[in-house]
View 1 (tube, rainbow, N blue to C red):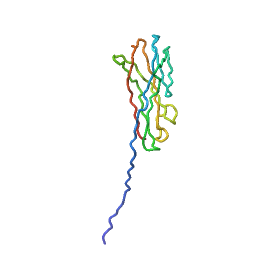
View 2: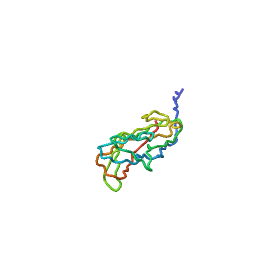
View 3: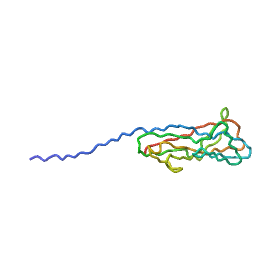
Length: 156
């Protein structure tokens, strides 16, 4: 008699998920600021768009309303994701010049999460806002300053 050849099987699985997308819907705007020459100052832009100045810097928004940056997230509903925002400083450069100012202390608020929570769920946290702090040196040149900062998301 011949011996039977033992056999076994394994399950094969694959899960396809919709690509997660991230879209900026609103740019960050600190607005216009009156220079006072009173020393280094800061403008703290909250995730709600509210500006808190220090050292006698006076926001004079004119036709520029301060706004936090806002991003939209789309993907497979119910899937958790994590947001990465800058942890260091990002320079803003004066248009037509080389002078810079730094933006730092980035903050985040996902739609249904507490301030500072970086993890959300697609379907309930489809938007998030990012605020930051702008440091204005004592002798900063007048003008418009621009820059950009990276934001990324990943599925958990």
